[in-house]
Image (tube, rainbow, N blue to C red):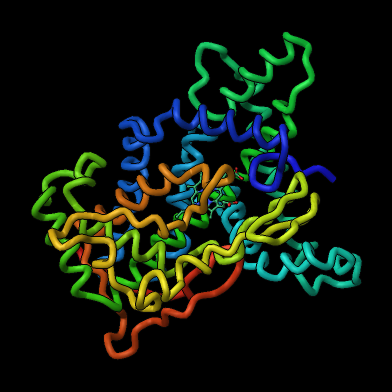
Length: 385
Ligand code: HEM
């Protein structure tokens, strides 16, 4: 069966969906202040709830996931959700279940007959059921609402822009992959790829700060020197904050959240590094072979942000830093992710000092493998500054 949407599709169908998504998201402000405003609005709700904990220990997992998901919601649906909205909560639960199950469902790519075994040992059936629930309750109903209220002069979210394109295509009468089915799958893909990845990286960053209080102190000093406490950090500050940027890069490198790459099918016979790879072969990239290679980094297992700085403390570009992958299938949301990571983390460190619940028993740095490499659940104390 031909996969729809962006992440697992290929050929012309993939090209059309990727081109449309990239162009539309760029138009909405990848790299522009309008997007920064949306992210900052969300961060406002996020830090308010963290502040309400008044330094008590709590698990930031669900809150972080909801907040990052809301950034994608603003872009795709044109609205954010209240953190307590029951459909939104159910949606986040299903995404979490699926992400933690994918490590086991990946085995189906290699041994597809396993899905016909009775029971659900590899959680494949549950994963598919969850996808169907999300599509029906959230995605389809939102597409219906957008169709009902469609106004061609007001297409400032992903769904209404896609509908506009669908209507243009319908007029020409040409056959196209720009259709409702691919719209639904692309929405699912933007949420699936854009939520868990970024929120997991934020949670990893906080965990590494707990283990390295001097790194947290140095980031805070840099934020104070460049931004102070009187205003929110902005993307304009990024180039003046090389140390904080190096910390974010080092987290992305050392945790390598996409441990099992996304499978892609080779669409013609090729010779690669002397190996013949026949058409139709499924290739799964292994970014870990670069991000964790001692031959490249010297001490790949050590958390050392300085590896991304030169002797003057300026950021150096390392071509082996590839957490967003490379080539034509490279992450579509890289700019958005980098923007979110910078704004979320600098605001968090500006407002709070993160402390472990028990300084003598730090939460483990051992991760959990699903489709993303996530930290094990932990609690933290966010002390208002
Ligand atoms: C820290 C955050 C993120 C990391 C580390 C990350 C990493 C990756 C990686 C490694 C891939 C696979 C590329 C390949 O197949 O070779 C990918 C694909 C993708 N990412 Fe991200 N990603 C992040 C955030 C985001 C965000 C915020 C979005 C939302 C727009 C997004 C959307 C996508 C999409 C749609 C694809 C599939 C692209 C395609 O197949 O054409 N990602 N990402």
